[in-house]
Length: 339
Image (cartoon, rainbow, N blue to C red; front, top):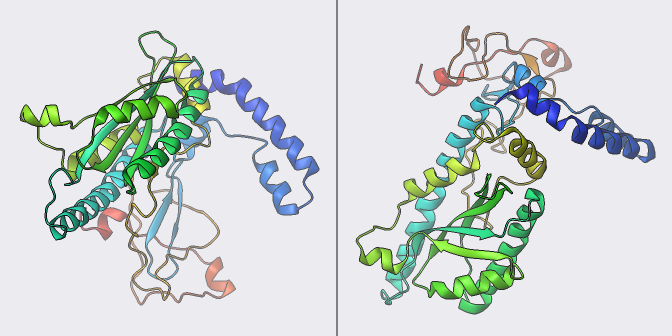
């Protein structure tokens, strides 16, 4: 993907956004709100973001855990896409193992009723192509909420799920926006899923394809495990626009702007581990981003690692003089013992 060409294709769209931000900054009464919109009146290009990716960072003021400032432009940055994929995979595996184990335990305590054993299932929800990826994406999101409400009302149980959106050019070159879902489902009549999806999309929905149906089970296909489902979701959540034609890449960048790449049911992910030394379990960072000249965009390839100074952990609250002093960093690969 030619990043310069993509930035040129997005230039009119960015100019419109900048003009809107300047207008909102002029009418803002709050200084903080005005500062917020002024910062967005000059949006950065992807070339600027990729150039600054991984060039600065912070360290926790209590335990010294490092955090590097990346561009997080997963659609165009290969390094950030891979980091997001690893992070999502790890979180998804933990969550799916926990949810699947809880479902198995509940099924056994209920006396193992036939047809009520919940398995991990992969769903693909599609809608007809309108030529407007953002409108199709919004339709998918709204229809999923309506379909989920139907599921709760029809079956009387809460659905545990995670979904992400994928975009491909489609056979008609209008853009094919579709939703990938992993959910815990017992045996259901999947024809009801299709009918409910068509009603949820007001007749614009094509179908709901369930990757693990009873017909496929009879043919010997096993239900996917937590790792397979996590890999499936991480792949599509972190998928970029590098393989798309330029016009489709620009359309999808505009459609995905400000939208979620991944959404889950409430309480789906487990609480992450925080700072082991702080009293509230959270990492505390200085406000300023510090230059990290020895770091590259991929933190596993540090050219000049900065090693943390020896001694006791710094206090949670620093004096102004200590905050003004230089901070030291310890590369993540040394922290994890994978140098």
